[in-house]
Length: 437
Image 1 (cartoon, helix red, strand yellow):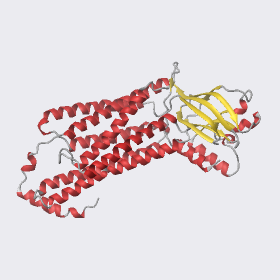
Image 2 (image 1 turned 120 degrees about the horizontal axis):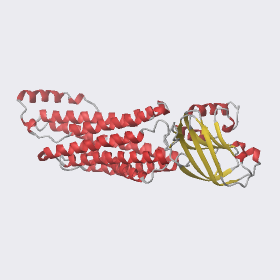
Image 3 (image 1 turned 45 degrees about the vertical axis):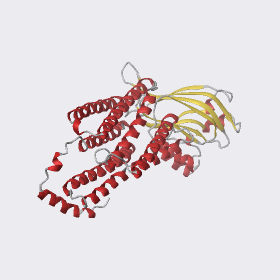
Image 4 (image 1 turned 135 degrees about the horizontal axis):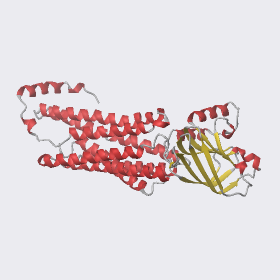
């Protein structure tokens, strides 16, 4: 087994691939390990495996030798044990390990000309498994179409199928609940804009658009997961989800850049370097969303799946770093302005606001990219919904903070600052050089 294959399976086991019914096409593939979807089974788990257009090429082994070619289910811990067994030369094929659950091996084919196989496998040991295809015959190439459907049967007389992994069955309700929250926030924001219509700027309407897109994105995701839960297919809701996810991602990063530059409420224009940041962030968001679609729709069995995963992570990191520059520039500009325009108190207020926003943006990026991923990794498969809730609560807190700090406000408070406050602010600004970003 090559190092590349080992890394591929480990990366795939750490992923959270969708669990809907998936049809995978494999053509003349000689990879020793091909991972498919990951799924959390209850004690009433079922796996339907339908193989069509099966053909073997390269070598013509006899049927007994094909016991080293087939499908198995494996947990993360079990796979590490399998790797150790192979390294210690206890076994030479993952299918020979006693810690994997063999689903179907090709030596059970009626003959070598069989092209279609239908198989139902019942999994009674509750855990999170990955469906894996192993080919331990180095010269053998396999071509086939694989339709895999993993689901849990609900307790009771109904025996209704649940195509969402255990730990994710509550996601449709959770996404719908958060969408209601965001629609409520949008209604509240519209009310605020109406009441303070004399002091609103273009950025405030942009913020409303971002909230509405986030609400629509969550609603589509709720419907997407609901249809997958009951039928195994998104029935077109995934297309709407990808559209709103793209629009939400682009507008959110654009909003952070615009607020960081002070556009609309501090100045009515963007400098050339600020425009360049937008010209970098927006195309990168397009690439990130294309990568996300490929990751979700192809699944880990694709040979380029890991590459697209790395592209997505790299682009996301670049975007997160890029949006911080305008905030840093605004802080520096406010420092310089405080030394020349004589409005120390006003500039100190603005400087403090941008500092806080800079820190909050960093915390938001760190939490949603690092902490949430850590929760996905360490949390039991039964409670994977908690990482989704944590990420959505962090995003909600960021939206609320942004809206509250940059809400429409009359400028009167800036003009009723007495001399003592002005002097105190001037003294405070003298210490600003000690602050390092």
